[in-house]
Length: 294
Image (tube, rainbow, N blue to C red; front, side, top):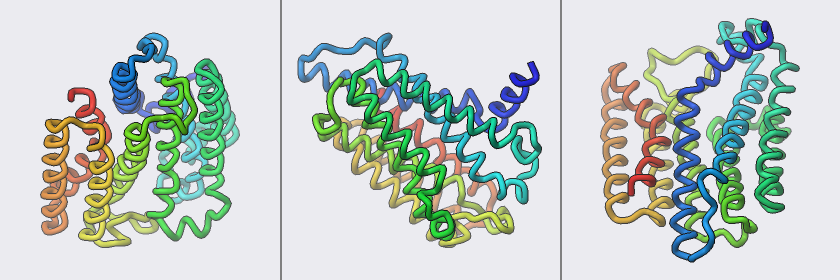
């Protein structure tokens, strides 16, 4: 009972089940929707939603393992700057968290193994890349001094996972995945990078000593430009699969993000900074939602 209670508190504080479930649901259903469209066009047998549903749980295990690895990687930093978090408080030990991450990766591999050889091989690539991320590619000191490089090398795992999902759904090798779906997989890389850039962009008064942020490194203007460039790349890649109406909606959302970013960079107002962060962090759900409705 005590073991369950500790993990319940950890999940509630560091892996909010509601927000992650919403994000993963949109991620999964967007991939499944694109798969259905492709399979229908090619007149192939279509994997039913019921048979594809285990992939959702594999994704949940995947994102949870990433969160667990991040908690361990950030432990020394969190002890100094976020002592209220579960690991610094000693509610869970480092080994307990690592063991759980290992269990999550095994479950992820088991699920993808049901979808064929290529599926489990791609999933194994995801697991290996995740371990390299945990080890910070064995160049920890170099990466920590380059926050943007750190972010994009870590979010690239989402593109690999996206390819893995399509491989499982299509029952084919990665080289046989349609080009448009590969573009979408790359778009996921930029979408999650945008999330990372946006959530670490602050007003001067919000910055914390010793805590890195993109606004601290590039200034507010530079941080906004970084976000907009990343968003533009995601739009460019996603437009390959969107009908005209979806592209128009996405273009309008990009314009709104640009206007909000301009206001945030020009006026020292907390509401503007929070709105800008909200737009960037909710962009994941928004862009997948557009794919689903169009």
